[in-house]
Length: 235
Image 1: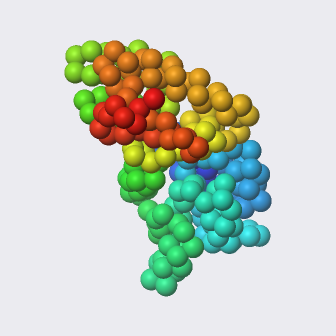
Image 2 (image 1 turned 180 degrees about the horizontal axis):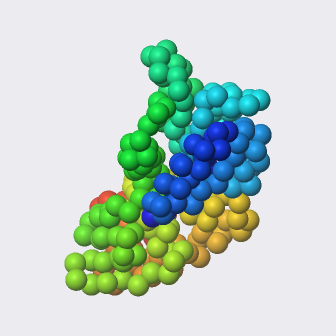
Image 3 (image 1 turned 90 degrees about the horizontal axis):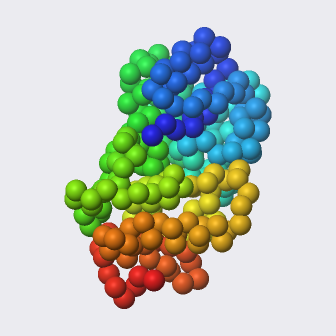
């Protein structure tokens, strides 16, 4: 699935080259030439991943990355540092401040796309095209289909995104607020009870194969996707 990627790069030629390759791969690209512009973009809506140049005018990429990791809202956004610095201590510094990967210039577009795919698969698997399966339930983002064996299940677009996120983060408990941020986007302002409505719709769509039992309510905390169908914990 296409990801929303924030590219923070002050060199116009490099920015254009990277953006062109990202868009060719199907991603949506947001651009910033410095940390101040990037901060405004992040404030409006969280990207799925940030490509961040080390050397920026004004606030450096390292300082901006440290700032992102210091705030709860942006702490989990994947960051790939782009830099001409190749010394080991520079790489260590970049990783120590919380970068998920470190790509040294010059790099090939193919290498960068591979690094992005690897980081998204690890940190934001709901943004990839990889099919996921659990307890006989299969979700394929590339075809937008959910099935159990030969039986196809019909889900609305929101229920599909909700199931995709839950399946790619199985066994973890997510609050309503977290689900709103991850599935609807943190810039969309809707009531938390909206999550309950779509959970009910999702369970209804999965009921014919009994996979509705995989969507578990954790009282006082939120919802969890279990990889095993149980009766006691399902509601």
